[in-house]
Length: 194
Image (cartoon, rainbow, N blue to C red):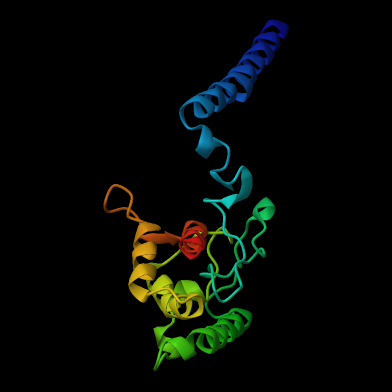
């Protein structure tokens, strides 16, 4: 009986060391060697200073920048979460109505005839993580007229920057295309510096 208990304890210790320490250390080391940038958070630096991560949205509110989708966690990557409000929840309906009104007020002057039905879903709903770094190409296109006008950059150039910042479907058919807002806004700043 005592011999069985000792074997069980040794087996548990062996599995803990193997799967709890050795395997994670091996995977962490492999990730650091093979994908150091991604393993360290895909941090974007300008002149040696970190300006954000390609993996986490940050709040851009100035009219000369593309805006990300709304965040359920105020763009705090330390505590990602989603709104967890069902489709019949009045709080969700009120938040969406408020966001649609804000989008129409911001984008309407630059997009003639813009109506509530023209606003892409990702412009008014939060993502599952609350910090999704991508917006849909439709939301980027909606904002393009404002950016072109405010920055004085030709619309064709804005469209080219959107295309360049768009990540396609994984393996050509998984997921949806998405525009990385941080990469796009940094490209806008570089364009303005020319």
